[in-house]
Image (cartoon, rainbow, N blue to C red):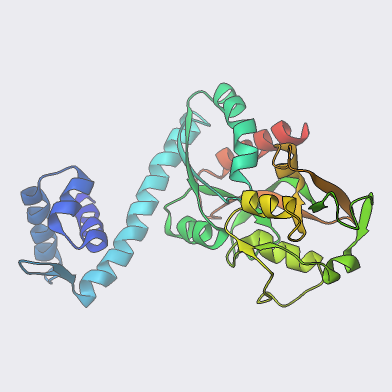
Length: 294
């Protein structure tokens, strides 16, 4: 297993020194481990030169299998720890940018108090990246927005997150308590950039099936969208989760519900094969209780 760890590190860094540092061993120890692995396999896994390391075709194939074996070994250890002491150890949790800044500050202190032996390591990325990291074993679970194509992942719904129509206070629709969804098609809609699931959700609620549609401005964050709406450039849809976190405070933005109402779901996702599924269900229940009181 140690030799396979060396191989994966070498394949990912393509450098003996950096691979050794990642594995917390000396370069000579890592080099010796790779040579022992090649002797055991009776094949060359890497071609060395003074400047770089090039993995052989067989080396890359072995690396792929090694990554799977190492993930399985980690999960076995996690399963044993979880069985002996549930909700302990480490969880690598991914979260998307339109959830993380608004949900996590509310729930993390309570989670630390409720599960003092659990350490949560956070990573913020867009949904596609998080799902790929889940599949590769780089993450244990992820907080994402649904609907979204999640394949075979297990999902526990945390809460419904309503979309609210947001416009500047001088906008013609400002005084309305509700805005018909059909009215959105006539507005200058401000969207997040491609890759953000909130963009797709907004387009769905506007009745536009074309995900390639261009808005007047495409932002990289929800905070930027809010500031643009506050200048009267256009309108957007804001999740209630962000509103409750104070994203429009002191901006002069007016909110209205959509008619009929529209919402996304916030869910916790993990691999179906994960041996810590019981811990993730417990975490999902705790998050649901903290956000909805259920």
